[in-house]
Image 1 (cartoon, rainbow, N blue to C red):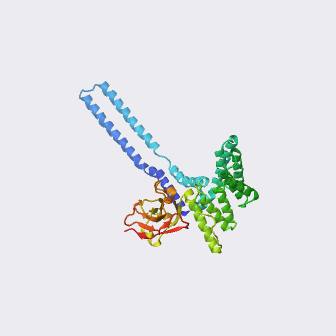
Image 2: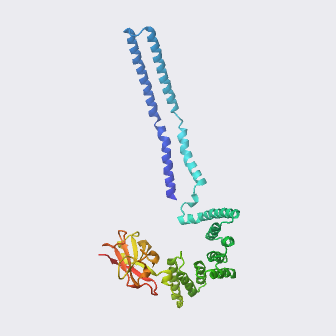
Image 3: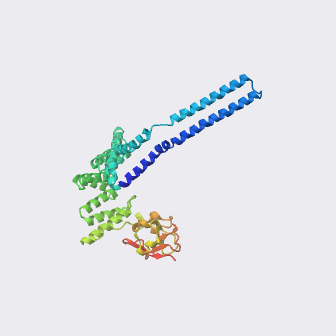
Length: 414
């Protein structure tokens, strides 16, 4: 805060200089104007002597001489009068800069107290953001009410009702979200994806409890689609919060095995590892009963935990590129799957699957075994060069049942 007020004082002083400097220079300006008067008089006398000489030499008659003399005198009077007016105009009272000197700091402080953010001085940025959050929430609620009014006027808009329901969830207006999804169901009928959204909103509205009403919606969604990821995810979250870790683990594994698009596999794998860690700490055993997804149906996938060896951290910058590659043990060395990261992302759990194939004939599921490499490329390319860092795994069976593959970047390319 002290720094702020010091900077304010400096700016005020700089502003006042613009008022005082011209005022202090005015005596020199007046003197210059007086010198100009004297010069005009000298010019007048010289020109008058020239006219007199012209008359004596016979080059001018008396009438012309008198006419030119009168014009010369008028010109002198005009010059002297203009200069005097300019001098009078340049003499303001000293009260003007004195008044501005007193008023500027006072007015500046008053205006800042009126429109500035005085209360936020000295606060941490996150505190200021926290205090401004209610205003942002208020603006969002106003926008949602505007959207709802438009939908009430033109209710045949499924996309609008879905957006409204999701937005109500964002601002934690859960019951309004339930109602919006009910309006959507009235337009397009019951679908597992919509029912799961409504069940999530109702679950949150009831303080994260599975009520009979919520369970009825879940049952209906699973009848329509037993693999719906939204519904299974809600059941997993409810089980986890209730301390039923094996059940939560089972539901999350069902989501992984569902082969549904837009599933956050890395997030699910991280959640599964976290649950397993909690179970290990509490001595809870879990026998996996759910088979992994059939590679023929959902494509082969490998979960790889990429880490940078602590001894290598001084050799790279946070923005250095890291390539995670799966390559066949036999045949062409073209990557079958690849993920691009940066050093600052590590450690990172990544998934390698057929969606990252370099071509239709070079898929991860097309081979039995692969070797996984993590290349830290200084040049930002997937070709290793001297000075790059690398980590290499042991041969990995693609279609086997394995857990997370740990890959440690601990070698320097020669």
